Image (tube, rainbow, N blue to C red; front, side):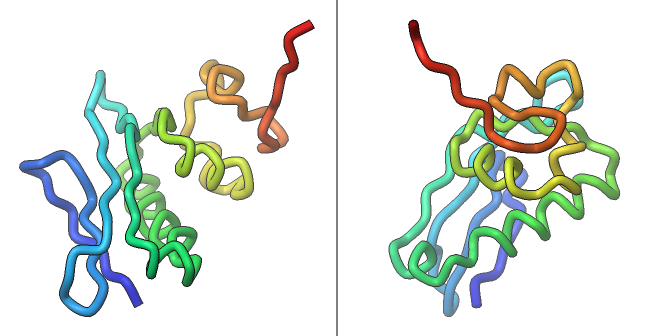
Length: 112
């Protein structure tokens, strides 16, 4: 199972699997909000579908710290679209910007 370490100096959450770095979630702090920018995962982590539990642990911590989240990263945005309890971390006036409806479904638009 992968473990997570918050790397404050690099503004990212590092993921480790059997002691080896297996990916990261890069963020930037902006006006007291954590803006998730990029997620990179080793294939072995993607195959085991561990990202959901990893993100859940990170968002539980952010919830306890009363932090807001801006999910610019598509991996994080997809996770939030399926997890109503964490979608509340996104400011309500920014939900549509990230394709998240109040019902927590990903909104897609078609050009017409």
